[in-house]
Length: 212
Image (cartoon, rainbow, N blue to C red; front, side):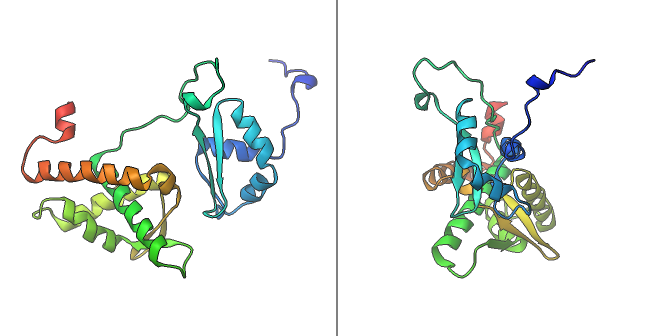
């Protein structure tokens, strides 16, 4: 192996780590390093860089977050080549979808009523009280809480939540969930969940059963 000649190894721009971070997921103001400041200092060139490969950089300074979204076909110039999807649309389980709806609703209420805090913090016990309403009444509370905790940790991987305290457990709801689940989408998902809850409570085949 011989390294490529120097002329085809251009120096990396200062914002290249930020670009890689954005490809990995959402970037937050409070991530704890200088990435946010670097992003704001070079936002135009980063936007131009991603636009060349069909990605839009969304910077929400009010909520302190930035993320990439794939441009839809109608947003691209005419005669653009067909692009593969960079971000896979992964179907969420009933439990994960339910939790997203509960979290999104909690964030909506927080933003409408709490004007004294910047962060939406909710205890796991509060979430459990809401969570239990969507399962048969004879379900064991300890198992439901364990299941809830597992789903919260899964959503933490997507940066939808972040653990705030461990004992007793509480969670910060991150604002990227607003971009992933708008108010209009929230209503549609809530309706689908209501139908699924009715199926489960009546012992009828669930949507997952029908797909299998």
